[in-house]
Image 1 (cartoon, rainbow, N blue to C red):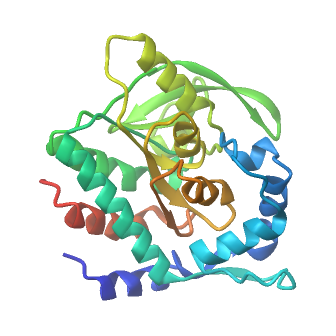
Image 2 (image 1 turned 90 degrees about the vertical axis):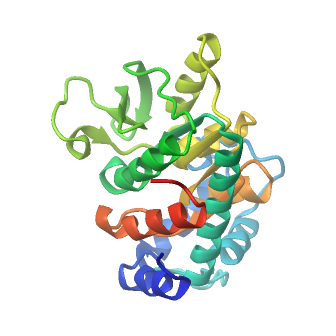
Length: 271
């Protein structure tokens, strides 16, 4: 089992925590958008209270360890690796609780190029431990707003993990999958699950709109989030999300695999 010390060292070496690639400017822009309740930053969350820019900045300082100084406006963001480890522990504990109850699980990612393997290995372990891994709405088309206008995407599953593809694109999952923050895919999947004979998920695992959208609908959700994704941390602070792991979500795919092993081992999942 990967120990906490080795995990912490890996996080820093791979720049998943410590100094990360996300810029301060990018994060602060998203905090302003969130405070203005811009849907691009809400990711499907409808906050219960009014969050000012200062509120969001302070929360992100508490949750991620970034600087809460509003005068610090440029450079690279910094995530406290101890907060990442604590987030992974909480994440793993929620996975273990789900396994203990054998609840159905839905996994989805808006970062198929980076995080697919992290979730796929977890899906394999959950299935082996007796949790049904759900794949509702496979093949459904979803119209999603992008910076290029509204585009139609297709909901697909790779090794039990939901992702969005461009219609007609074939090839490797990383080539066909598209990056998205939208909550519409999880809403589509949950809508189909609710109207079919199959079960609803008792836990949703993922990122971006997958977990914010599920948490907003009252389904337990846990996920990973970068410093420019304040919606997940607000969702956790308001009790809509059960656990959020602060880390850089755009590193190399291989760098997340030690985190998967850590979660699987802590959750005592059978392989």
